[in-house]
Image (cartoon, rainbow, N blue to C red; front, side, top):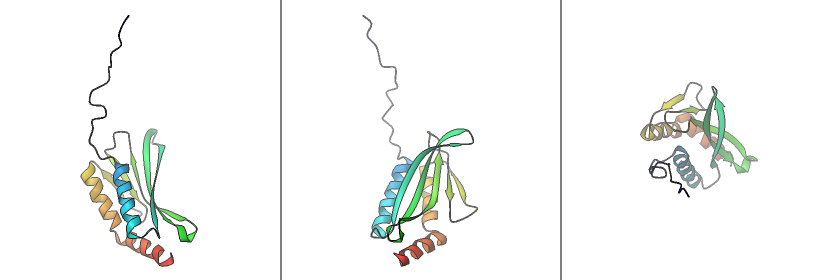
Length: 130
């Protein structure tokens, strides 16, 4: 009788990368606390085909429960299974599509989007109506 052996790498499950969805979820939690849930940030993740390639897309949505769950996507993150490089499409600016090569760049671009004047104006406008 032959005994089977595990051919998988010992490194599987050992990675300490902070994945993009985790970073986005953390930022959504901060946002929800800051707005006292008058506006709610939600991460909508899905599989998609982009230029014939399988990608993962995370939409960072802002929802206003008091306005009938009015929702807009502040930005979308698109990456392959390897995560980097990734692209970020900032919906409040027609020209802002960012390419990100690592976690540090990802957090830097998120900070720029989240503190951008058009983001602050959109959030404050929704909060005024909540």
